[in-house]
Figure (tube, one colour):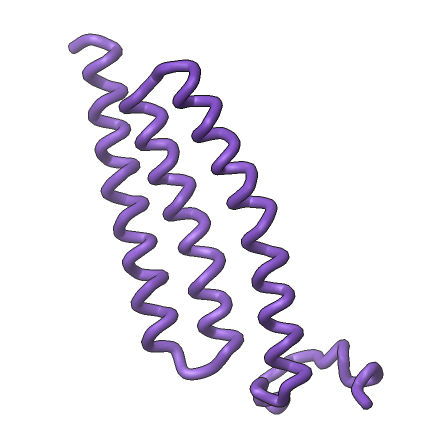
Length: 113
């Protein structure tokens, strides 16, 4: 088996795994009961799924221009998803959509008006 064939198979496995994680994240966003659970489903498995999809693409395409673009997409995904989740969580907290009894520690309680 050649190195290209092994990379193609690994790329296919990464693409399937990434697609399954992204599917699980989408189901979690639809099925979870509250904002914080949905926020978790929208960020953690979705980012890992997207990174696995990008890894699968990188293993399948293997051209320098494509690898550069894939790396940029991965960096932007890693940079924006945590910030987005933070802003969604804070907006939900401030608008009263978070059940504060479910929180282990409420660090924003002293800043509430």
